[in-house]
Amino acid sequence: MRKTLLLMSILALAACNTAQGVKKDVTIGAEKAGEALHKGGEAVGEALNKTGEVVGGAIKKGGEAVQKVVD
Image 1 (cartoon, rainbow, N blue to C red):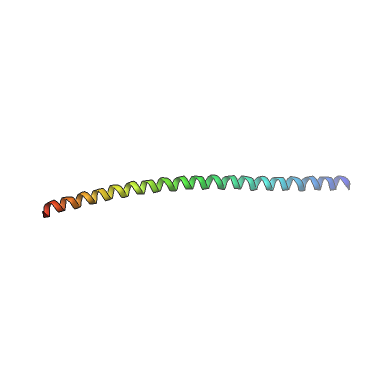
Image 2: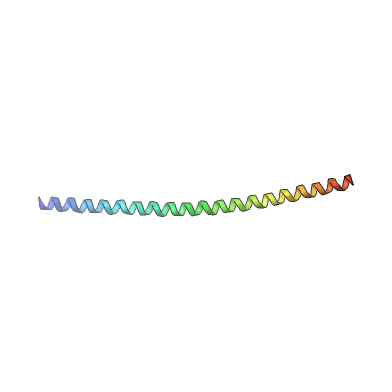
């Protein structure tokens, strides 16, 4: 009876430690995923800014060309 109780206690303790380990792993994974998403968002934002600048420059040049023709 004592051996059974001791064995059950050890198994319960091991299960708790395993659950805590899984929780830590999930937390670390979520942090890394969040960092990756943040970096990806920054890269997309920079690309959109550059694209906007290029398009804006092209429109400006087109407007200047039209203005020269009108003048």
